[in-house]
Length: 329
Image 1 (cartoon, helix red, strand yellow):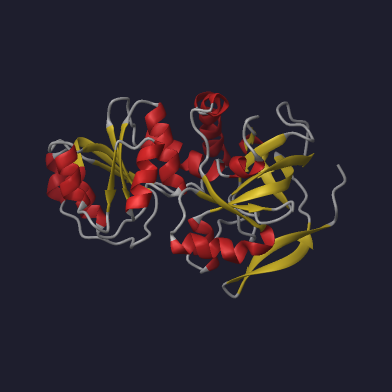
Image 2: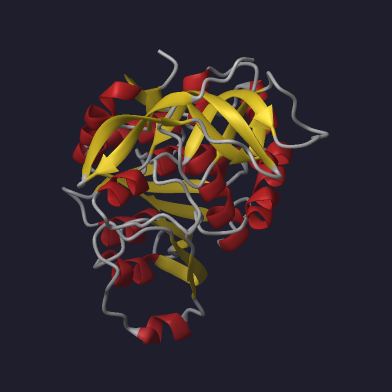
């Protein structure tokens, strides 16, 4: 495969997305260079564009945390990768470009029944959901999960994975149409947070027992309300704070119900940690892709040059599922 010296990319300049031409990066030890066919758009991209989420040390200044494409070069001999392989990969940045570097250990084969656009919608959400819902939240078969933002990329992923592994799912979403979408995808119950109080609704749905695990990306005033929703020995997993990182907390329910409060961010974790998640996904989730039991939910695709429009849709919250940039167009 011929690799050019210069590539197209989208950079942030003064808070705005701007098309640029820049040198194609060269892989160092343990890395692969991927010819990007599609890249996922995620809310952290929007936050980084606004200056609210600086990239970790050593990460590319180019946005983009997940890609799908073709291995164009590898830094050294790899027992698992070869030039020409079709892969999707979790990256710390650089996805909004024609070529992107990825850790070889975080490159996973694209399931044969998925397109590049669908594959680009896997890494960020599936790594995040698996790590937080199962590894940190310890969700078990037969337990009840509450997911805030059920129609988002994270939400649609959590619904499918929780259902596949035998959990009951309650979601919140911002419209009756989104609630129905979540139910059609596998949620057992959906609460329109604009019209219903989710605390009272969950109390009614669970007959006062509460939920076992909450996956929350809202924060702010949701935090004390989440505590009211948790069952005895319940686990709250915080993965984002779209409303606010600050909240008042009454510690008494934490003690009386023996609650576990935890959370994480994925981007800054090292490759060893992420590689462990990749291995779990390959073993437990890739067969579900192959069988068609689950799939990335793609709301819409945009050309790389239309990244501004893609960010506008993300900020509008009118989407259900993932937003994807098609790079090789």
